[in-house]
Image (cartoon, rainbow, N blue to C red; front, side, top):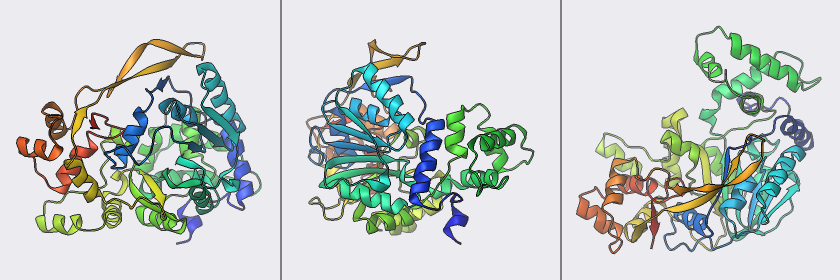
Length: 424
C-alpha cells in the first residue's frame, strides 16, 4: 500500500507548500490552548529526573543548566520548558507567527528571562551541534518530509546531546486519519484547501453521524470539544504516523538511536508507561524477555495495538560518547542504587478571569499523590531504607527480582511522571 493511502497526505506537494499550510492552520487554530497553570520548578530538579528517565542514577548524563531547543514549540511548550529548567538557556522555534506571539505575551506576563523565541521552519534549520537537549513532540509528522526534519534535529544535537521525540503511533491514528481523509473527500481539495468548510463538515458529522460503529463512538467523543482541540485532532492538514519499526528505521537513517521510552503525562494517566508485555506462559515470557529492546518493543507495538504507549522516546546520536544502555542494564543499576524519598514544591502562575497569569501564593507539592498507586511501588516507597540499595529493599520485602518486576517498580517510582524516589 502506498504512503498516500496509509496517511493523510492529500496536501503534500512540496515542503514549502506544507509549511505555508501549517503556518495558516496554526495561525487559525492556536495549539495548545491556554493552560490553567504554569508551574515553576526549583532549579536543578528537572535535570535530576531527566537523568533518571534515561537510567543515569548518578545524574551525569545531562548536566545542570543544559542548553535546550524546543523545536515546534506551539503556544506554550517552550514556556513550560523554561519554567522546568529555570537556569537553562531555552530556545523555542515554531512556524506559526500567532503561536509565538501567544507564547511571548505569556512569557512577558510571567517575567521569564531565560527564553528566546524565533519563527523558523524545521525544514530550513541550520543549527550544528549546539544543544544538550532538544524537545520535539508532535511536530515532524505534520511535515512533507519528516525524515528531513529529523536529520536537522539530529544535526542540532551536541555529540552527547539527547533528543526527546514524539511522533504519532500508527495504531492510535487509524480513526483520526480515516476521518481526516473522509472530510477532504467531500470537496475538491486540490482547488482550494478550505479550513472553514472542513470545520463545518466535521461539526455536522459529529452532530449527526448515524452509523453505529467505531467511527461513531470516536466522533461522539468530540461533541463538547473546543475548536482548537477538534481541529488539531480531526482537521490536521498533513499527518504521517509510525510504528516502532518505521520509527527506528527513520532514526537510524538520521544518525540516531532509540534510548528508552519517555514517561509523559498522557501515557501516565492511562497507565501505559511500560513497553514490555507479560505472558502467562513462562516459556513465551523467557523468549520475549531475552530479545533486544527494540525487537521486544516491535512485538509489543503489534500486540498491544491501539493500547500501546505513545511513540515518545529519548534518542541520542549514534556517535555519542555514551554507549546505549539496555533496559536490563538500567534495571540492574537501579537495583544497585540507594534512593531517598523525593518531594519538591512548584510556584504556580494561575490564569485569572481576565485571561492573565498571576503568581499564586499557594505552592504545589509534587508528586501530587503522596503515595504511589501501584501496590508494589507503594510497598517499596513505604519501607525504603536510604542506607540500603534497592536490591536489599526488594529482598527484604520478598519482591520478585525478575526484569518485569524490577522495571515495573522503576517506572512507578523514579521518573519525571512519578518522581517519588531520587537516587543518592
